[in-house]
Amino acid sequence: MLKANDLHITFNPGTPIETRALCGMSLQIPTGQFVTVIGTNGAGKSTFLNAISGDQGVDSGSILINDIDVTAQPVWERAKQVARVFQDPMAGTCEDLTIEENMSLAEQRGQRRGLGRAVKASQRAGFREHLATLGLGLENRLHDRIGLLSGGQRQAVSLLMAALRPSQILLLDEHTAALDPRTADFVLQLTQRIVKEKQLTTMMVTHSMRQALDVGDRTIMLHQGQVVLDVSGDQRKGLDVPDLLAMFEKVRGEKLADDALLLS
Amino acid sequence: MSLFSMFGALEIGLIFSLVALGVFISFRLLRFPDLTVDGSFPLGGAVGALCISNGMDPFLSTVLAALAGACAGVVTAILNVHLKIMDLLASILMMTALYSINLRIMGKPNIPLIMEPTVFTILEPSWLIDYIARPAILIIIVLLAKLALDAYFSTRQGLAIRATGSNPRMARAQGINTGAMIILGMAISNGLVGLAGALFAQSQGGADISMGIGTIVIGLAAVIVGESILPSRKLFLITLAVILGAIVYRFFIALALNSDFIGLQAQDLNLVTALLVTFALVIPLFKQRMSRRKRV
Image: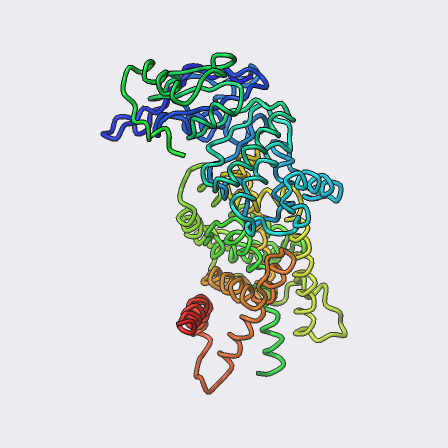
């Protein structure tokens, strides 16, 4: 269960380039729900995700995960509850480390790291099994540096890594945006499979309205740092991309440049 | 080059291989450009020499010297992590402060260790000439340090330090307290340098306030030379390469200074060092240009 209450974030306050990224943003996501997030550039999607993960501090408001207030916790402390896949495929893994070392880092997410061996033989079998489900042949390349993998492969491994440890929240920040269409589709299907298998509470930012409606249980739209649209269930099933655009226009009472949202 | 000067070069090369391992941890694993080394090396020498000249056990003195070095590393890291001072600047501040601190510790510009027992006089067997025994003892110390580092950096904690240097954002997202890891890594790095300083003072007959000048350049040179003679991505081989780099580098220096026809003297040491490092850094660039020209 994720609760965000009245979040405010302003960049460069008091200067000519002052930007109000979040203006009283509130959202509740019940356990196990898969929410897709859409909005124009600068709507506050990434800022919101960064606020949840702790990468971005909030000016005011609170964030609760399972009724525990995590607003003041740094990123590494929140990592116990929050797993994340970045937009940049290079950002989610350590390119200097091997595949198994990366996976071992993720398997101990939020745990105390002592002087035990980083990669034990018993872990390797598990890693192989997980990697085999990708069907990319990575299970035979445990000792390869992860920097040798393609962006798509690295993103797939990042997703696996995010699910290696049970977590309360999974954050996906346009994690298919930097991939070619086929790989993006593969990673998206993998996402749905993992989220379903592990019953993860998930928030996925996407640029594609089609994707936002097809994937997950609920769709929210952000505009100027606030939730302007929140649909789920039957209401969402009956929706199509033009409906979404129309709803958006109705809510905001202003004309929207189609291509800004329809890109991809 | 005489046999005597060859063993002398090996001895100093081995001591500086500990510095090189420390520099490797800060510059390569943590990607923290750390110049504290120029201060923590004489700090180790000062603490070691002071303790020994006051009658303390040489082994205990050497351990204390390493701990002093580690403390210096911790302070630099805290300046960077908690006070948000840029890494390079934090280390320069610490290096500057250490010059005064070292003078205060010693109370004078140098402490000679001529008649006092040292780890070398205690460990060297009576049947072996001292200039051979010292490098032999150092080989064991350096190998132990290398194996300990190899083992440590393949533990969970060691892996967390490597992840911190490689991709701090990812490390934090995996629940690693990156600030704490930088402090820990810098402590290990400068601890090794402090140890080297104490051994240097004991092998060269005393600690001197100016013994730290250029330490960072020598350490970096060793790392760069090592990486070019034995390029590898495996930690076990990289630490070996770094040690070999320090020794090879020292042999080049000894060769340059001992060849009368070049006309170089001891005071030219730092100039030769700077030239060698420049040379080692520029080689890849020339290689690239050569291969590009061939393709055209």
